[in-house]
Length: 322
Image (cartoon, rainbow, N blue to C red; front, side, top):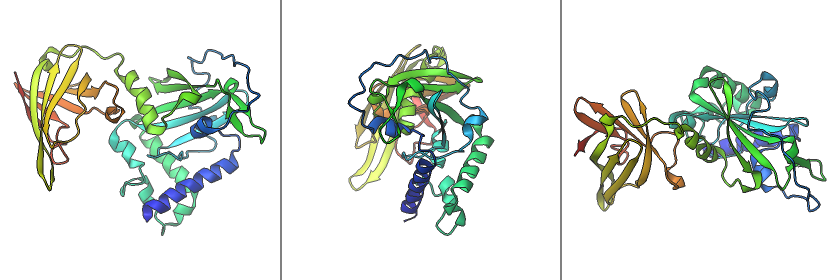
């Protein structure tokens, strides 16, 4: 019941935002709006591989944070100017825990403070203020990801609303080391994913593009075993086989009623004494901003975290090295 009420509340915020900002264009609208039949001329774009403005400038935050009508939700703010175009600045949690904080299913998360009996639930301004205060206290926990539609990509429908041209591009940037980094340019009409799923697909290649060779101490062939969840048919069991070389990690597995495993190639990032493993193939179910597995060395022993079911996934399990 609470989840339904919260979802209805998010929808009401979106409706209020649309009435207040008729000119604001969100990603979903870009993808679904019908293009007028008389729109045939090809658009000439400037070079936007360099961000045209500092999207974090306070003057662009006049309407405050909002929550796009996308699941799972996340904080964002929007801005439109006829001489610039339209953009969204999205705050994407760097860890699964931070992203889950904004999930309406989280009984201890942000929306848990806006219960039906709480008058604040009927005050969108208070919700925006609290969200903004939380973001300000923990800026280092977020990626700042921008979706930018330049003025050349936009036109107006007969009823006065903004829409994308048929050959429109959307530009994506991430803020790092006090500057905007260009990620990718995509035809707006070709964008099928949205929200966290889209941002993961854009950020992960950027995160893995300049990784260093894997340290020799982590290279070799390793085996680890873990039990899965208990079911009426018994407990599953999975054996993991990792082959780690200088520039590549390969995972294979054998399973008896075990949990789903993302088999294939991974890339490794060494963070102190921990080797982080990130899936690097095409299965969308396996793409994550967080490492899928962690491997650490203690003296001559190696341990892995992330394998098995809920009972073992957060435990360090000893690995055997050939």
